[in-house]
Length: 97
Image (cartoon, rainbow, N blue to C red; front, side, top):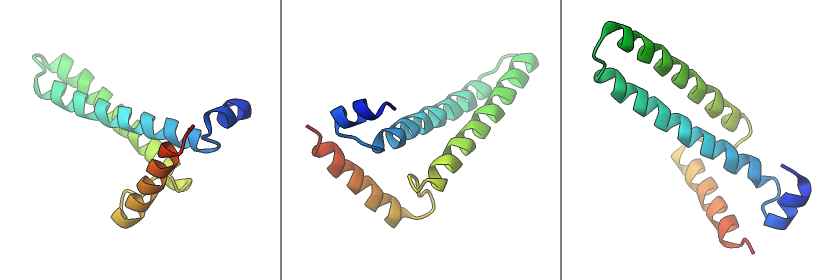
């Protein structure tokens, strides 16, 4: 994001983290939606198409997760660290002008 916009919003470098988390949440939603649609598929062709799209959605979720883990923005296997990070993010959001 543009440094001027980051300064104006008071978010600094956190904007990338916010965008990545939003993308991760959307990817999770996509995985759920494809899985549900797959269970309702009426024909083998539709089922095969949805299964392929589900696999791609899972791959996307993994890539986003790994991106966030590598940057220290997401701790899916350490609840304590994730809770601490979430609390820091909440404080940052509450302190925005």
